[in-house]
Image (cartoon, rainbow, N blue to C red; front, side):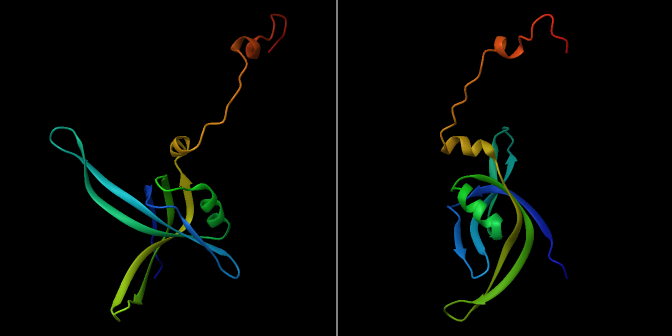
Length: 136
């Protein structure tokens, strides 16, 4: 049975962690999602919070590691996968993770953590003054 695709939008709980494997790199990150509702007064309230472990592989892992930081708002698309393991006491544990095929950063988050690049612009007169005898 094929694993279902999922898209989540949330915030990074911590800085992503990357590991090098013999043939590739893998990045793990924790994305926190919130479900909101409006109460009777019209105020937004947090209904439910979920934490997702996301794996990112290969070149996308390197790009994500060099770009993403704790608190960033991201959208992740990928496949849900479930795995099991035995904990230290020998109990069987189950984990649901997302293997990401796409990770998108909300650019409004970047402006809060990085100094904006200085942009020099000419006056609108300089840009749009094409002269009266210049045809379009």
